[in-house]
Each structure stands twice: as C-alpha cells, then as structure tokens.
Image (spheres, rainbow, N blue to C red):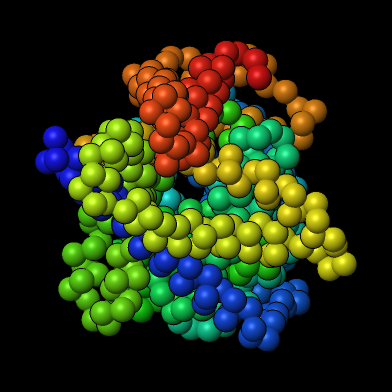
Length: 497
C-alpha cells in the first residue's frame, strides 16, 4: 500500500511540477511584454498612393459557403492602390463554395481588380499545398494571407507593409480580434485564451528576442523569406508554425503588431472548437518532433534553445493536466497513508505559484490590455472574475481530447487537415439552422469525457464521505469542465443552436 501511495504521489508531483514550470515560463513572457510596453510607440503607416510595393493576397478556402462572399467583398475594400495588389482565391472546395467564389471573382474582375480563382481537384497537401502552388504564381514580393472567416480592415496593407522597410523582417503578424466574442459562453472563453496569445505571448517573445510565430492568417510574408526557408510543407498540421521556425532559423525576423487588429469569427459550437483544438495541438506536437532536433543543432544560444523548446512543447501541457487530474483521485484516498508516513499536505502549496502566474497573465491580457482610455475597469474585472474559473474548467475538460491529439502528433500518426467550419455568425441575434457543416456523430472521446465527469463527481462525494477536502475545488472544476464539454458536444450535434 505504501508503494502505491508513493507511486501515485510521484506521478502527480511530476505532472504538477511540469505545469508549474510551464506557467513560470509564461510569466517570463509577461515580464518581457511589460518591458516592451515601456518602449516608445512605433508608427510606420505610409501614404502608398505612389511607389507602393506589389502585394499578392492569398485566400485559402475549403467548403466555406457561408463566409466566402463576405471575405472577398472585404478584401476588395483595401485602400491600397488597386493596381498594386492581386488577389488569389485558392478554392479547393467540394461543394457549392467554388461556384460562389467563381461568381465573385468574375464580378470583381469586371470592376478592374486583379483577381484569380485557383482550384485543385486532389487537395494534395491541404492548405499548405494550396499555398505552395499559388506562391509560385504570385507576382508580389509580399504575400498577405487570410483565412475565410477574417475581415481585415481597409488600411491593413498600408499599416503592415511599411515594416518591411527593415530588410531583416520576413513576416508581419497582426493581432486577432473577435467579431462574435459575446455570442455565447464558449466564444467568451475562447477570446480569453486567444487574448493571452495575441498580447502576452506574441509580444513577450518578440520583446524578449525569442522565436515567435506566424499564425496562419492575418499576416504578411516576404516572398523571399518563404523561399529561403524551403517553402510551405504539408508534413505537419500547423504548416504556419513549421515555416515560421524554419524562416527564423534562416535569420528572418517576425514582427508582431499588437495594436493592429484583424477581426475574425470564433467557432460557436463545441465540435468546431474541438476540431480546431485537435489540429492546433497535434500540429504543435508534429512541429516539435520535426524541428526540435534542428533547433538544438543550430547556432542559437542555450537560453534561446530552451525558450524555443518550451514554445514548441506548449501543447504538451494538456497531457500533464490530464494526468494530474486523473491521478489526483487515487491520491486523495492515499493521503491518509501518506500522512501516517509523515507527509505534509502543505507541500502542495508550493505549486500555487503556477496558478498565481496564470491569473496575473490572464488579468493583464483581458483586463489591463483591453481597457480603453477613460474606461472604468470595474465591469471588465467583474467579467474576468466570473469567466476565468470557467475558462480553467474548460481547459481541464479539453485535456483528454487535446492529449490524444498531442500523442498522435508525437507518434507520427497521419490525419487529414480538418478545417474549422465558420457560419457567418456575428452577433447573438444570428442563429444556426440546419447547417451542413455541423458534426453529426458522437465519438468515443466524448463518451469518455462523460465518464470522466462522473469519475470526478464520485471523487467529490468520496471526499465529503472521508472528510478530506484537499482536492475538492480541483475536482469540482474538473467535473464542471468534463461535464460541460460532454454536454455541449452532444447538444451541438443537433441541427439547430
């Protein structure tokens, strides 16, 4: 019995230590974020009516019938000189989306735009394959990329292209904004996490001179940087992260522009969110497996190799969250034996530093950084207090789903690029009825998520029975997380939300 108790404690402690170390590295990014914000503002907007660099705009699309029209309409509103940019609509769709795209392309050709529809029948390489083939035909020295759900502002190019005056800049990435953040609880919680990435993480890495990333959309590449880095490759599901790392190892810099926002639509239902998370987590693991050996053989100094490793292994945090959650239940019922052996439960208090780090990071990204001049922080603080515990629960509830993705990535199991469907949902007044892109089958992972909800509910009842509430808040959050994920996944299999 002692061996079992110590074994469970050891596994739980290892998982908690990894989580804490990761959180402290995130806190380090917050330090650089705050340090960078002490620098003077940089504004490089130019009046590009003459001598504007030629830009190619690529719009990779696959089965996006609900949003493709608004995307193309939006791009044609750029205030950049019409004769200094071209639009490539990369449509690999297998439904009526391609007909909608073709009609829009012909409409804007008639209006004098340089716009072309590029279609493929085999979808080889998925998004990366489409970008690779189109880049060969691109006339621009700079290539802007937008996914189908984005609505960049008219001054996007005039705001971003000037940063390429620095010959070392290979990529300019803008911050994602959320046009439907207030649609539901799910969209609010997603925004909470994405705001951290697009404020603290991206800015912190840039100001700390660490490797950061192109986020696949709402950014501009120098074509030469793509070519020197080896071009788009389809051997991972996160081709954007992969190319970003290869370009930076070639000496190119990524410039992140926190103050320039690019609005986009968040997934509004759980199955779409899980599809997106699976691609990001698995692709992150695939890229780590692919690029970490190259990073450690590179001429980067030791500190930057460590930071790059933590960055590429970010998706692995879900493995340790899952393990910590599952093993905390047998640990709860082993504490009696451990106490008899002299174990001090206050030992767990040392790991609270990780949780406190996360609280501060999310507060800065979602309250402090979001405040407008003259705005009272009270409402944002109250919103944060209500949403943050639910966000932690959601993250814990996704840990099984995301852990499977990470393990598949490290194992090298191949899977297709499943795009995240978008439905042109912008406000709470919009509804989704009989949408053809909704998932319709329940997976074994979802069933297991329901089982885990019962597992942690039983742990709560057991804790009350044995009068040991050491983990009761943790188990309550895990129960809420897994039960919530299970409930919304099943509910959103219906044809109407």
